[in-house]
Length: 260
Image 1 (cartoon, rainbow, N blue to C red):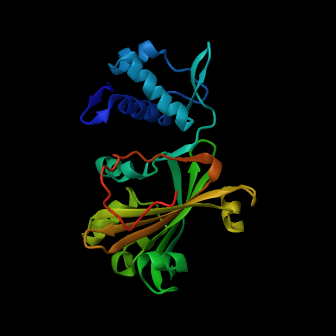
Image 2 (cartoon, rainbow, N blue to C red; image 1 turned 90 degrees about the vertical axis):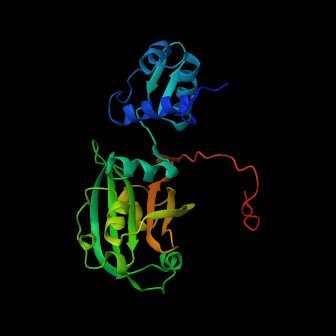
Image 3 (cartoon, one colour; image 1 turned 180 degrees about the horizontal axis):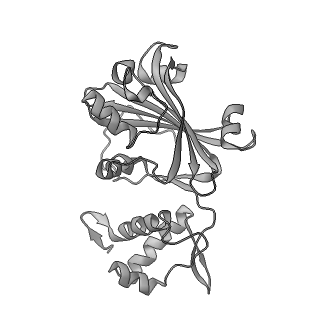
């Protein structure tokens, strides 16, 4: 039986802790990890649990097991997006959602909303909203990793510091909640793989023939108001989406079958 604590499998707790240690530089690129029995002592877990947790990180592409040599941190590690965990972590530490990357705001102010975003926000195409465009880069190499934008209703962000081209000191959603007095309660993510626009390829420093992953994230308040629509775009070979959830035992949305 899987060891558990507070409803979370222990091997996931170990994987989360080791992932964070790798992201924070405790174990650098190419470095060999301690043996399984040493990790078991360090994290006070059994060797089988440690082995399961290491398997999670192997699947994520963070580490590599080399037969007869040991387990090593990969030199090239993909970005991980754990959508269901992002808000809770940011509420806990009051930091940026992607704190491991260097942020820069390339535009902040009022502008017409793109048609696809207008549909998500339930407003007329070309209506004016507050837009914050960003570029996220690797802190060490400076390599661009993500381009994106957040679209905020004028009623929420108009006339506030969110119209200034400055990186905010904490997650944007915490700023929106503080300003609006409303709390992010539900979210909807739409993912697709596509070819980049010339502007995206230039910003990410990739060939125009390399695919990107594009997510449109819509966040709602408890009363159904759209508080934010954000778009994030990454080179497709650099990101892994991790979605962990309880398996539904009975259908709750009979009119929403999955196509795949």
